[in-house]
Image (cartoon, rainbow, N blue to C red; front, side, top):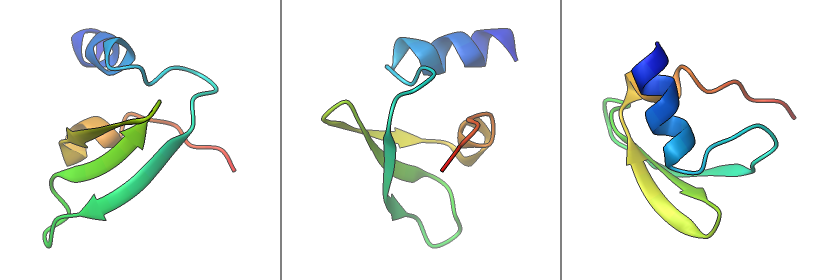
Length: 54
């Protein structure tokens, strides 16, 4: 979990950051999200490590 968590944080996804899901591939992998004004494609396994609050 450590290296993946660090990589996600390096991409700008940190506590309190808004993440918008833009597209999801037909089988759910990958997902396209917008973070801090830019788009990222993330593997489903990586997105499962992101905790979401509404």
